[in-house]
Each structure stands twice: as C-alpha cells, then as structure tokens.
Length: 408
Image (cartoon, rainbow, N blue to C red; front, side, top):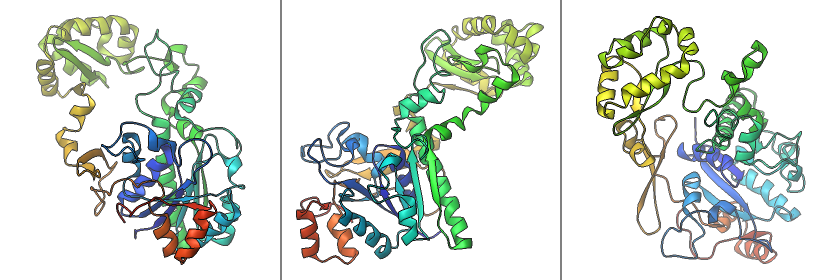
C-alpha cells in the first residue's frame, strides 16, 4: 500500500497511538492541536506529563508524550474560528489528505467544522475516523480509559478474588480503540480502492472494549456461577492449575491447558505429589481448585526459578519467570525489534516494537514534534503566503512554534 496522508485532531493516547501505527509505515501524519487559550498550557495536555527531556525548560515535550507521537508533524489551528474551517478544507485538498481523524467529544464536531457529513460533502473520497467514549449517540461522554475499564467490566474481572476491583496495568481500552481505528481505516482504504468513495468510521471505546468480553459475557446466558465472571487473581477461571507460584528466589507462571499437559506435569518427579485420581480431568481439578493451588505452591517453593523452568520446559509445559519492564526490552525476541527515536540532546530512546513486522516500516522515527512546529511549513505547502500566515497568527487563527523546525 502506498504511503498516505493523515490529518488528525488528536490528544491524549487513544488516537495518537492509532496514528503512530500509520507513521511507522512511513505515512505522513499531521497532528492538529488547538491554539493557546486563556487557561492552561497550549495544545495536547499529554505534552506536559512526565519527566523533562533535558535541560531545556521551555521544551513542551515530556516523557509521556514522546512515544505515541514520534514521526509526526504538528500544526496548531483555532477550529473555533470559521476561518480555520476553511483552512482545514484547503489543507485536505492541497495536501491530498486521505484520512481525517479526531478524538474529541462528538458534541463538538459541528462547532469545530469537523463533522463527518461536512468534511465528506466537500471531499467525498475522504475517510473520516473518530474515537469517542460511546459513539455519536452519546455526544457528551468523555472517553477516559479508566472510566471505560470500569464501565466495560474490566475492573470487575481484574484483581484478587477477595480484593477490590482493579485497573489493568496499562491503558488497554485506549490502545484497543486505537487498534480498531487503525484496522478500520485500512479496511476503508481497501474498499475505497474498489468504489472510489470514502467512509465514516465511529469507534466507540466502550463497544471496542466490550468486544473483548468473549470469555465472560456469553457465560451469563449459560447460567454461569458468579465466580465465573468476576475476579480470579492470577488464576485462569477455567484451566487449572494456571497461576503464579512461588519459588525459592522469585515466581513462575505456569499454564495447564489440557488433561494431557496435567499428566506431563505430574510425571515430573517433583510434581508427582499433587496428582490424584480426581484431578485427572479439568472438571475434577476444578472441584479441588483451592487444594491444588496450595499443593502446587508447596512444591514450587522448594525449588529455584531456573530449576522449575528447566523441568517444565523438558516436559513442554508452558511456563515463564515474571519479567519486569527493563527485562522485557532485553528479551532476544524483542530487543532487535524495538523502535527508536533520538532526543534533542542526542540520546537514543528505545520504544515499544511494532505490533507486527512490516517490510519497509520505520524502526527509527524522528522525535515527536514541538507544539506548532510545522504550522508555517504546512500552511505554506498548502499555498499560503508568508504574510497571510502572519495575519492568521496575529488573529489567533493559527499558532506556530518560534525558531526553526527540529525536523521535517
């Protein structure tokens, strides 16, 4: 697929993560941020979250902002002003924009001049894609990952059995919504190649999150027990034993997914004491779930992590030590696939890998842009003269960073 141009009114994480996936493919991604207001710092609030990049206190890119926004350009438009609406149309035409994205609340679409019917009426081949909390039917709902985790039942099924509901360790709803936008834009591009027409795509964070409830939600109509659709700690609700177990010097996670694997596990001399006739089937093991976990922990606590993993690997039992984030990035299966960027002071930052290897994709991406870094260059590319850009900036319709761009 040839490189495309994406214009994205984006902030926070869900949409920046989605458009990062396009930037990794070598596509042009231009992020739009608001012009400075009377209150607060200008642009995406995530710019100001995390540690500073170095000694430059004026740099508006903090550590939390960098990874989702590398490889992009940044412009600032006051879309509350009708003059900026016309600028938006001009940019779509002049830059050959294929995809317009946004993740503001739907109630603001019309006022900002970004409603899908308005943009696609003038640009029928445009693919319009938006992320919101619950879609345009709920136009004022804010799309915050922890709130949607709570609404979608994720917190109810996360945590210890007797403990309180808990959030996941990463913002999985934001990332799920971003992946859905990415996938559906790709689908729309394929269909546009056949029909010539663009599409409107609404990603509901709640609906996207609920689509992952495949192992719990359908059980309600099967008359499930309450414990089947609530918190289970590190256990698997169905396959036993699957859990974290203590070792002399740490923990191991092992997963028994079949009766065959159980027989292989209990054929290991160390684990022979946990076997009995009732436990030969998963149904029987479920009846003795708590006792099995106690018996397993008593066995594993007598050995080191390395000893346990060696014996489990020899019996082809899925198992692993528990890795921290520093260790994860050194895993041989990942270390060579990490993406990278370079900070203004020359330091290299290793970032998350692409989800899937793609031939020709960019492993090293330019540093995330400063606020309004490319406003002047992008508007000039769209045919605006310097004096015209100066007048728009003076009127507060656009905003640009001072000084030369850090990258193209």
